[in-house]
Image 1 (cartoon, helix red, strand yellow):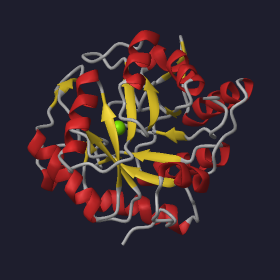
Image 2 (tube, helix red, strand yellow; image 1 turned 45 degrees about the vertical axis):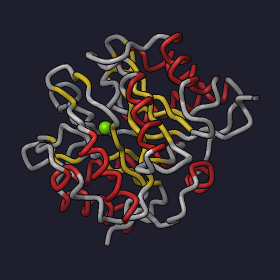
Image 3 (tube, protein in one colour; image 1 turned 60 degrees about the horizontal axis):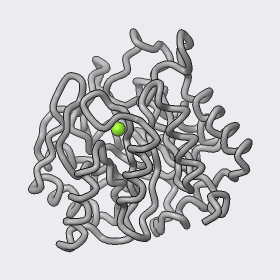
Image 4 (spheres, protein in one colour; image 1 turned 30 degrees about the vertical axis):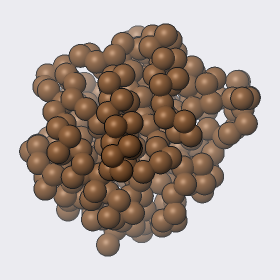
Length: 283
Ligand code: MG
């Protein structure tokens, strides 16, 4: 298949759980900063915003009220970007009630990790029981999961959950390459993971740190999609502190050089089969 056939979806992951102002002063932490970065990245070509929130001290949290503020503010600013909330393990507690507390808000997508792995400073613990409960709440709220995998086995887990009827085809994956503790970001690893996806799946690739440019370039060439942002790399290059906008601009440049057009949010909705068509709004 011609990799240029489908337009490229760019996801912006502006904040994550790990970056701090000390590590990178451009990390958006407050609601206002996060919304501002998302809107600027949308203008540059991002069509999905992968959102994490922080508490008043800047610590990662899964607090529903802060997610609600961000979704409402994006709506108030008429931002049409696809909103994707994080149900990741680093936002505090490890129950479905805590990690899935924002899933009744009107987001269009949410991240769903289908297995456990090591993060540099903690364990990314996701039991089948927890994965199934989060998936159930997503589907009940018409939220499409983005299956976040840090290793090959998590793709097998997703296939098992598909067969069991917990997950619904077609699946959309985020292949996260080069997190310390998980699969390394090599072309061979990425190719093997892409070839292992269930037929009919779509995928995006996150390249952590120095694997960012090679992994995202390879994703573009394989007909996949790309995620970028300070969540994935605090440096633009050796010794150069990143901003979210310069990271998006770089992906747009690489895609253009490779002849791949950039998808708008509505085109991304079409590609991913989203049917909410809302303007990032909260209930
Ligand atoms: Mg995340």
